[in-house]
Length: 256
Length: 279
Image (cartoon, chains in turn orange, red):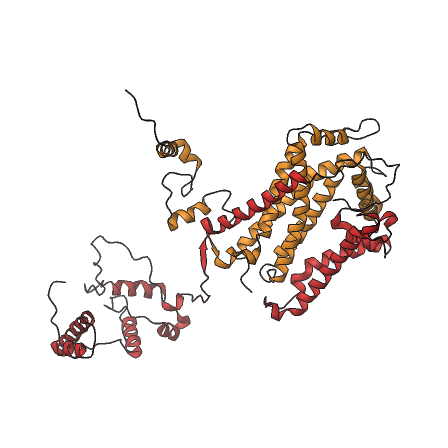
């Protein structure tokens, strides 16, 4: 007896209507069977999803206007996520080792560009994404200033934002050395020389950052750890505070 | 509704003649006939005057404990008149009992007397206890789907832009790092070119530490320095002008450093020696 093959909607209904699926997606999820376009389910979609619940259930209508926020804060965060993902990919193929005769870091860079599948594309994404993030973070700051969005009760979140700007610059700058080419080496020389002029403890700061008196293999290792672990860790903490304060300070700022 | 209420025909006719709709005229005429009947019974109608209400409270207070009977009227004005504007817990519970018809069996608000099973009243809130919140109602929309859709489109747009850029533009990779070979053009990343340009004019400690340090502290201090409560551009011309000035100044430094400096960090025009600038 020939059976008619089940239709797509039947399969979908069956997949969504079981204990396992329902345990994964919380009530109100658009992926759950029985999602209806009601106020209740719209509220639950934001409340019950780990990715969406950074948002409140409802937002001020002007917050939707593209010309109010220009999505700059959200895009900065998106670029941060993108850089994390592409960065992790690059970590599979990169060794922060350099030294006379064993230029592994530089050789790895050549391999990523030449032989790794999608290696060149991901490296390009990582590099241009980093520049784009510096740019969007900067524009986000300007947007917030011109809207006076740092006014009470949001003063401290501005301070957190400035710290995040500095962390973004540091993240970008520490990544600059990793290719271990002439551009990286001499750009970082300019930067670290400047830090060495800090009064009182300038020499010590420079020594700690370089892992010696000049840029060398230990500098590369230190900046690698700073770039992939230390500064991202600090950044995530400040990002959490930044987002949490937006909610606690009454959502995004009002219209002018 | 057990009995049909009579319609006051006179009122009804008058309202119909005045152009009132049939439904409303009927309702008003019914109300008029009920009013008439109550006046005929000798009841007084309309809201009770304030002094009568406070009289009722006084009467209740003097007879508290035995159950005042039907004294449920309580106003903020009464509260203000008594000690601290509050009732003692005993007074309150007695008043609740009285308003529920406890004591003389008169259920003033239609709640069964004790002995019969019923839901409890959670609380009686005096008007003075209600906090008046005066804030403008915000026009709000659901995050899903409205905001999330906007965010998703923005994310896709920037993501695809980056992907296209990454497909066509290769990230720079120079020759192997060599500490013994100083390149002719020696530049920091573009976002630090402002600092490098400052180095040209000031002692390294001033350009590399003092000025950026002061700038960062000032940037963080902006919300505490700007005491102007208004966010409207027309009310904060000084702030906007100052911020724009410093940002433009910084931008010019970055542009000079990035595009107009060549070998030995000397001033060159980009069309003579090319761009001495790598991203």
